[in-house]
Length: 463
Image 1 (cartoon, rainbow, N blue to C red):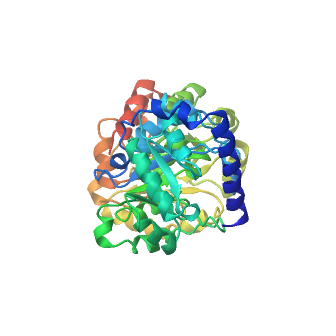
Image 2 (cartoon, rainbow, N blue to C red):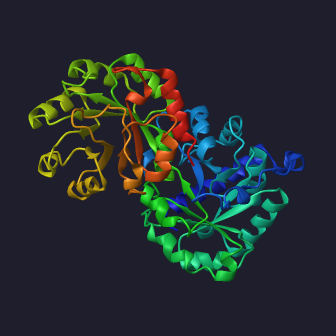
């Protein structure tokens, strides 16, 4: 063990001695009731791309404070929508957790809970159930085969599952000699604290095929991108994700991104009320139009006032049409825009001038040949919109989505979308986000809150 891990375990031994004196096992052991939640079953379901164990973690020794605005009720609301189980770090000294966190979280959620801590004694197993845990984490690097086996059996008698963590082949072989049914492959090496996602790929190959059929495999640490999820889909049963959610300004947006579920952009925002309603409904992006000929044109100073009130996690997008680069840069600076959307005839060379920015380049789709332009632009995102000779966006016209088929996950889809047709469009194109403007308006420049809510709900019901 490295010095930090050794320090943690030594502290746990001292803490354990104190707890045994202050709250002896015989005081609560007989009062324990079996867990009625099946953690293993929850994370082994085959009816989705992959299962998620979402973690509650305020801090870590390697990263310090991760979540500064820790609102348990709000976090639980999002986890309930997308996760199959939850991991709760209960260590106080090194991870800023608390022993009461499991029961507190369970007030707002029925998801099965994994207690994540440094379990070294049978007391910890019984205490975990007392705290309300439905599963416990056992770390192979700090436990021998005998204790792993004993703790698995004690957990089982309490209706809990045991998740056994490994990081290398030696630890895996140790665990394969026990009755472990759930193996967590930690991509973080606890000796160096470095993360390598290849760890999961290497170790999973070492599990014998006969045993693999009976073992549920979880990959943990370093998973924060959609491509990571796709990489492990079909290889592991579940992913444990903590930091990506805890450091996010918008957990739901992060979750939907990881799951490959489309986000929502409400474009053509012209006033504070519409901005607030779009955020309240669940939009992840707000679009502000700086094209002077548009009926939704916003003066930069007015847009800046609205953007200043937008909560972190909601991204502002400036929409420009064939405008001078100097003007775009000035408006971006004034409004502090997160993304720039070029909606006109801007060339690849023009877009390359903004190489340090997050760019959305619009491709107006007239026919199948229009899609050839996708390859010409090396921007972070592309937006597909309907073609119109006289207008740049907000036409209310839809284009033939069969032209596209399912595209890569960097597409914003626009053009005549509304709550009635957006589900079909998503299933056809598989976009990163859908962009709506006239489809949620009373008239150009004024949104309809009911239409916004209906649109966002339609998108979030697509699975």
